[in-house]
Image 1 (cartoon, helix red, strand yellow):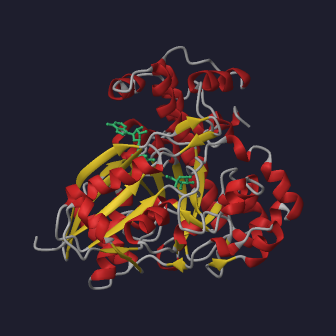
Image 2 (cartoon, rainbow, N blue to C red; image 1 turned 90 degrees about the vertical axis):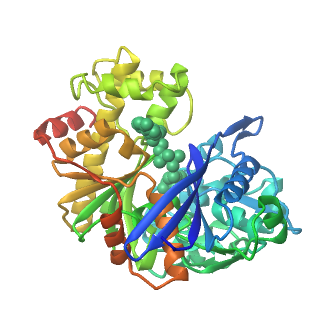
Length: 480
Ligand code: ADP
Ligand code: LRH
């Protein structure tokens, strides 16, 4: 196609990639030009992101993308940030959301703003790593005291590329400092918690210009300027949901990768007490939408086990063998924050099976099966609960992200939900990123139009439910 290329930088918790997308009236092509590991590093202060390594990966990816880029967009995992001093220099290494510094912090926050009021004001589920709790944990540190600016990870990398600062809205909604009804800062929550909102740069919306690559960046990447940078749905999950190839409105989605984010796209937040009790979140999506979803531990459980077993290349073989293990022998609660921290994952899963009186998986293959059954079960619970709490029903579940490569997980999810699953695209976040850039620089298209293009151009796989949803309900009862 003659269409100009867009570069999408998509940083997940397990890997970063730079993809080049080309969008035509009836075509959408995505090519991976660079992929690099994202490895958290444990230093004496705690668990940190290697943000310089990530930035180097971004530069290398842009070099590989080559000349002629119509624009660049960046998305990443949510909630985390870097702090800048008065000179604009980064203060320390950004803290990883799995760091333990937020242990016990929620109670301090709720003593000032009760959990119910916080939910009514921000719509965010309780997660220890929401930026609000991280900032409370950091409140008297030398770093935060010196900081003059806070930039969320994609905004920090955008700043390094362009010299311009902003706070992109979809990701800002994961700080728990945004009111999902006004789609603006919640001044009252910030005030009551003593959080200085002037630390944040002004809000930017997906599609807004975010500057141009600095001359030094052009030099380093060998690119000819000017190359504009465009704000996208900079929360990876917002970009991924934008790229769910749904044909109507009656769909649920599950973005699978390190996490499973399972829920619905709505026009307005659900802020009821029942919704809070069910730990559903109202994050902001494209074009005025709300991502009403629950965080499920996701393939993190498996990643951590594979890391513990020391066989990083064994995943394919493990999954083939796991498919032969009888279903639902033991399950764990894959929504349980007890699995958040790294380390000893096979033992922690075994322990959870033991205390709930179920057979303890006796091999890596059995543990793998236990994880996948547990994820499918958590997917079912989230899809069912979301429909009930939002008063909407669906007749298809879309799975996007790295988990689409796991056919067993997709089939088990169809079985558990009792609904057809349509899986794909795998690189949904990068596609959503590209499409938002394309419409900012070309003819405007709405979300439905973007999705029609995805349905026509992406390879999708359909899994039919094989019956027996009662067994899944019964399995859940073992955990209750
Ligand atoms: P993130 O964006 O959170 O880093 P991804 O969307 O890249 O995550 O998904 C990573 C997950 O995809 C891995 O944890 C792994 O379970 C799964 N995955 C990747 N490649 C394969 C594969 N070839 N077969 C099965 N699963 C895979
Ligand atoms: C997925 C994700 C998710 C957040 C978590 C911190 O990558 O952005 O939506 O809850 O990381």
